Image (cartoon, rainbow, N blue to C red; front, side, top):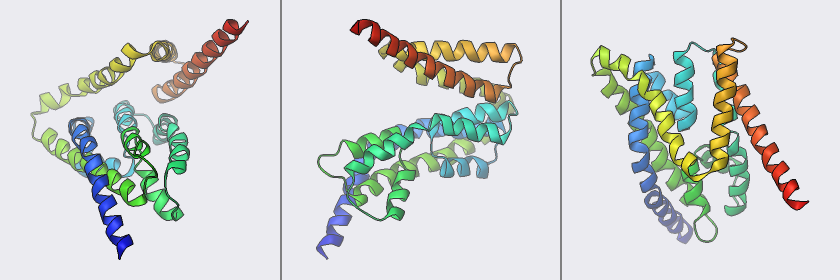
Length: 237
């Protein structure tokens, strides 16, 4: 009985802790739903993507690739590359969480995003499964519901505005990138190298859009690490 009350209390704390995430997700999810509509996805497809993927950056990239007519295999691989950091996040969070069944762990692990990870990982002391479920549930619900609302809003817009909104997809990427560029020279270098490689591969027709993004991402990541390691070695000598 005491354990049940404790679980409910922890779940409520999780909901409260995740409320700020839910609020923050609202405009981004609304925009995703709207852009999904202008890209050509149906209401069901847009909501289903948010339900199954639940990863903002990957979903925005997917919209861009879908608009370009890229095949599903490339889109899936791009999503894997973008979200590969979640392996490290899950491993790190596992040390923070209380012991529980694999099924329950896999359920809240699905709901890990940069934001939910931060809230759960920074909780004082061990984080309970109930707390994690509370954080994930309210964040997930906000993302999925507002994606659907955004699509409905997009469907009510005039056709010429729906077509013009496709430009907002690229503006969104720039908006998401700018704060990081201002704070980190590493991110700036990463973005410049990736943009240069992607442009070169695309303009020369070496690779199609989807694969050029994958290759550019990998090359830029490797280049940044090589530069950092080299500078450290030089500094040590």
